[in-house]
Image (tube, rainbow, N blue to C red; front, side, top):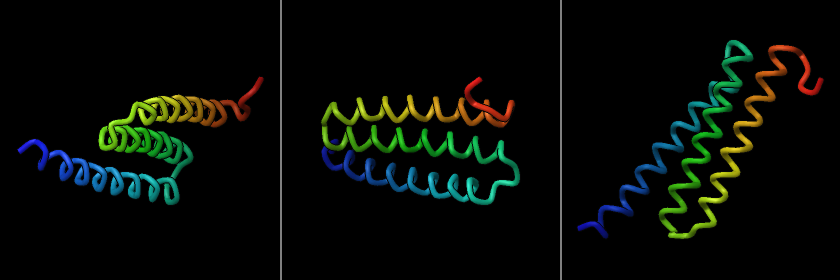
Length: 93
């Protein structure tokens, strides 16, 4: 029973994540303010990390988990840099 449930659950999860990423990308393109776009880009990086983790579960490879850690790190640094730029107008002082 478990062997039949896991592949379909992974496929369903990836479809839902793809839909969420598309909706967030729509907010990036149509966001009313720059802050909304930064928040949507942060959400896209979170969804990308989750997709990499689910693919790692599907393939049973630990390399995907390291890649997910890098995606999370770059997403955080990018969001912090964009927020600082919106706040002060410069990233490096």
